[in-house]
Amino acid sequence: MAESISPMGINLFSPFKMANFNLSHRVVLAPMTRCRAIDEIPGLALAEYYKQRSTQGGFLITEGTSISNTSAGFPHVPGIYKEEQVEAWKKIVDAVHDQGAIIFCQLWHVGRASHQVYQPNGGSPISSTNKAISKSGEFSYQKGHLSRILSLVPWKPMKFLRWWRIIVVQP
Image 1: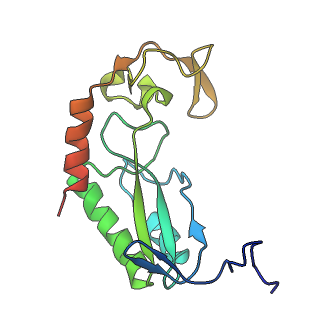
Image 2: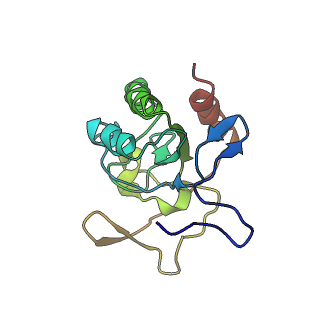
Image 3: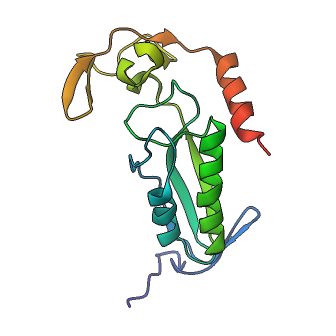
């Protein structure tokens, strides 16, 4: 194998201390949306996916994980706002930790990139702006269909902070 040394003399496979975490190398699994969570619950396929990519002292960042029932922008993404979702994530985290790796959850709310098809009762997506994500206002979703976003709901910071507290402060 060729040496992986940067111009600064840092080896890609050398240990690294990231705050309180001791990584055995500098290779990180970046977040990649898998769209494998049926009913927004991460299942056995995701547990196996993350486990297979775990190494002793390795670092993984999960795919975007919905923080509320209004935060999705793709079909079959996992959530972390219901008890059954949290319990499913615990199994994944345990599988990764059993391999000696570290995992961070990427919390996700796609805002104006969402569409009514992903919103409760077909409501408008919550966004920090009332401007469409593209000039045409068209959005590609499920099997390549195009659809126009009808309207956006202004973002309410206090509601977001409540979601954040519920997710981050869980025991």
